[in-house]
Length: 299
Ligand code: GRG
Image 1 (tube, protein in one colour):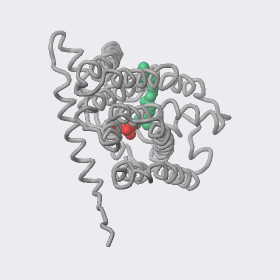
Image 2 (tube, helix red, strand yellow):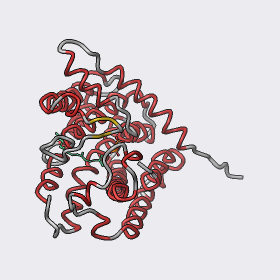
Image 3 (spheres, protein in one colour):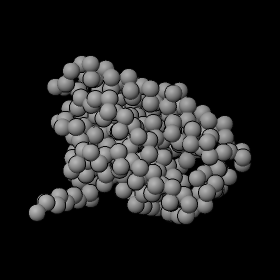
């Protein structure tokens, strides 16, 4: 009889989150000038799902890599994600007071220090990968650093954010433009997490192609669910101000397609993502379950 492998995603996410948080905690000490390190740590250690580092570790393990090799990159991904949240919350951007259930960085430390905390986390993320990645060929580390740079530059997060800002107050934004925004603003970093984890484990071109499709699909699904939750969840559940998109009259997936069609499209994307991983067998269970979690999540 074939053996059924069971996989408990709750336990998996809890254990990985704990490991990531311990590594993040150890990554930044508070030294002089204390204020900037405290501000960096305030946002970095404020919680969150830690989905990006977990994806990075899971992709490394999918290809038989040791997740300890990917841990510095996983931490760097969370540093970059956190800096993007700090900058996104600034008055010049989305102007939000709450994030991860706490006051936003600039509300506690002021706009000047919040900008600098974001800058410092971004620069440190690259230093951290270069200095702390051990036990793997330098060429893989170089590829990882280049991939992350591309994902956050004007080719990635920054480009997506610029188009998002340009679309503010416009009611005729098309699905094509919305996809451009979110492929760059949200999916690019999620994809970099998966690809960098895989690169560190020695991925070949076929692995990279499959995992790129997986990551693009879960990235867009993630954003569709984010837009839905902005309408259906409470600020307490989200840890940030709910209902912001409607208040700002922002074009979102539910405003274009309605809630039900948006849910269906997210589910279709998750199925497409999982189909890419079938040939990896049981080794793909974590990445498959994470894809399902993206549509099932409540925050
Ligand atoms: C990267 C150089 C550089 C600048 C940043 C501000 C900006 C440019 C980009 C905005 C990026 C952004 C905030 C995208 C939204 C992504 C998103 C859906 C975040 C929510 O992620 P979760 O739900 O949050 O994983 P937690 O708190 O769980 O980590």
